[in-house]
Picture 1: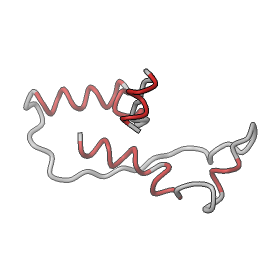
Picture 2 (picture 1 turned 90 degrees about the horizontal axis):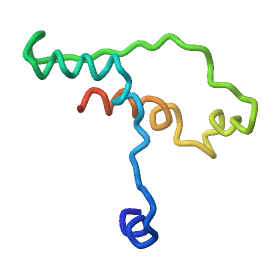
Picture 3 (picture 1 turned 180 degrees about the horizontal axis):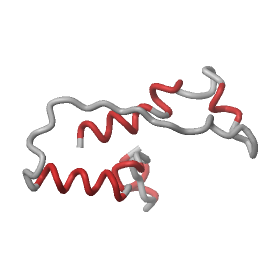
Picture 4 (picture 1 turned 120 degrees about the vertical axis):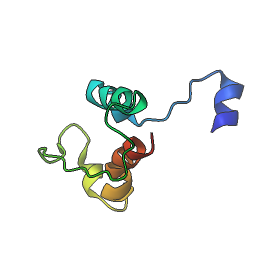
Length: 83
């Protein structure tokens, strides 16, 4: 993918958008500044409505068409824990 992006002049970007959210950036600054110490455990519990189905989004509920909840949603949490 990197080669194809370079050859075509396209932008290749990781789509892990939570790392850019204000709250997570603020948490990162607190950690980096040493204000809360070194994290040794991360736990995430997300309260949200189910994924919308309309407008061509039903693929999210199909294991055959998606990477499952672990890849489609939890990848964002793993990204936050590792950054």
